[in-house]
Structures are given as structure tokens and as C-alpha cells.
Image (tube, rainbow, N blue to C red; front, side, top):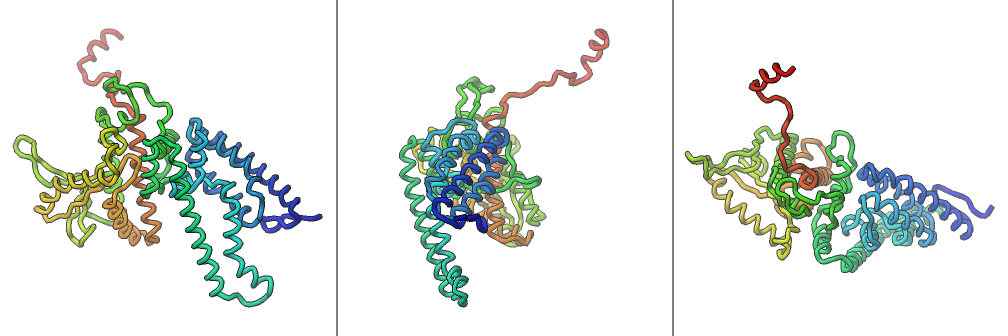
Length: 436
């Protein structure tokens, strides 16, 4: 015997190690192929199983076994050819597959690239543990200063790798159309990937239907959602993505606004606030019912003790053709200034503060919305006795999921009223009696 499995890795000759590694890769290929049909029916569950479980198996092996990166080629090919198309519900192009197989903060899906990460995973792991390994081999005491120095060195190298991924992503995006490139760059520049990192379990409100999850992926990458209707059921217009997100008929566009309002009222109540008001009236209407003004929600004590805080939300389609000439920050500034000019003076007259909450249909938040989320995190972390960073991540992901669900409804929902066939009043009862 010239080699054997040891502590999850392998010790032995190069030939035996390569043979063992290829066998493991084939096992993972079969696992991905078995998971791919599940992605057709439950894409979010399959995505979580892949990113949180399955891919960690080969990531661990890459950290402890110095293998040939090309040995993982069949695995990457299976991910791009089988798993990702089933996840999206439609074929993907090669450059799209390369984009998806990178960290979410760099525009990817958090799917680990088994070829490109193999060498760096092993080198970083070996350098991080070399002081500890040396102490174990020699039997000498562990020098904590040297060990901390090795860890800092590894962190610096990881930052260099992170810079490489960012530059590589920018180069890769040149192969996309200008519209899609602009849309994807916004996901890189802003924190809007939290919804991809959550685990949907019963009761946490993160689970998404197959259509909701796939629509969210399509919006993230500037793709056309699958199985879209040809025409709008309300006005007969050509039904593309922009029409779905902008058409006010049927109340679906206004519904995504209401969903965000209701979620924030609920979060404030969970944080322990007692005086939470949905749609507080700032200015009463005149005798004709006009010129009134109301915010989306209000709460006492959010920013300052005993002081009323008012909020109004705007969820906009930043990819609309009429707005594509504006940068996202300029667009946010325009909407923010409009909200402030409308509400601030009236809010001050009522001894209250006003704060606009702006977001895109892709769940990209502006800076003021991020400030609000972080302040909410302070209140909720105290109430729940949970770590602040985890609480902020939960709130951000919860709000992102809420927006993406409501946007999916704009794509899939009906814009026409439904009429029941039953009798609505007693006028037809004599007619029924005569004909029964």
C-alpha cells in the first residue's frame, strides 16, 4: 500500500493521490447531477443545499490535499451544464456560467469555482497552519505571536485575491451588453446579495416560490424572466419586464410599496415599539378631500426618545428606459430630494422627523435606507439579545426578500378583477326558485 485516506484528506504517492482525487470528483459529479432535477422543482432549496453543504465538501478537500486543479474540470462542467441551467430554468451562456461561479459580492451566486479556487485554497490553508503544524511536529511550544503573524499574512493575501476577483469581474462584464453590464455592476457596488445567503426555514419568512426565486435571479443578472406573458391582461400592451414593473393597473406596483410598509411596521413592533402607526396623517385633507399628506409609517422613539419619526418608501425601476441615462446615485438623489421637499416641512410642523427609504426593484438600497436598517438593527439586537451584525444582516435580507417577492408579483400577478359566478344579493332568488 502506497497511500491511504487520512483525516478527510489523503496521504501517499502522487499517483495514488491523483487517483483518489479523481474518484472523489466523480462522486461529486454524480451528486450534482442528482441535485439538478431538484433545482427544477425547488430552485431555492437546491441552491441552499449546494452552496451551504455540497460545495463545502470539495472546498475542504482542496484545503488539505495538494491536487491538480484540472482534476476538477468534470465537476465544473457539470455545474455549468446541468445544475445552473436547472436553477435558472433556462439555458445559460459560458460567460454567464463564469460569472455565476464566483462570490456574490463580486456579482456571482456564491457558487465556488472548483478549478480556479483549488490552488489558492490549499496555499492559504497551508500558510495559515504552518506555525501550528511545525509546533506539533517538533513538540515545541506554540509561539502565539508567530501564529498571529501567519494569520494576518493570510488575511492580506485573501484581500489580494479579493482584488483580483473584482478586477476579473470587471473584465468579464465587458462580454455582456451595456444594459446588462450596468445592471450587474450595481449589484457589485451596493450591498444587495444578503437574500442569497439566508437559509429558508419554517417561520423565518425567507422561503420563496420557484417563480419568485427565478425572477429574482433574472433581475439580478439583467435576464428576461422565463414564461412571461406576451401581452398585458389589463391594457393589451406588449408585456416586457419594464411594462411589468411600471404598469400601475391592477394595483401590483403599489402593492410592492405596501408590502414594504407592512414589513417595517411588523419589525418595529418586534423591536418593542408600542406606538407604531401605519400611514400616519401629516396634513389633513381640505373640505374637497384634497391636499392631504400622509407618510407610510411612523413610530415614536426610533431616532430620539419620545420623538415621532416618519418614513416614506419609494421602490423604483432603475432600469426603466426613461431613467437609463442616470447613474443610480443621481437617481436616488432626485427621488430623495423630491420626498424631502414634499414631507419635511409638514413633518417639522408636527414636531416630527422625516426619513425617506429608497430602493430599486433589484433590492438595492440607498445610503439613507442603509442608515435606517442599521438603526433598526440597534433596536432589534437589544430586544433579541443577538449580535448586532447578524441582526443587521437579517433585516437587510428580510427587506430584500420582501421587495423581490412583490416585484415577482408584478410579473406574475393578474391586473384584472375577478368576478364570482354566485349570486351577490337576493334579487335573483325568485328567478332561481322558478327554474329549479
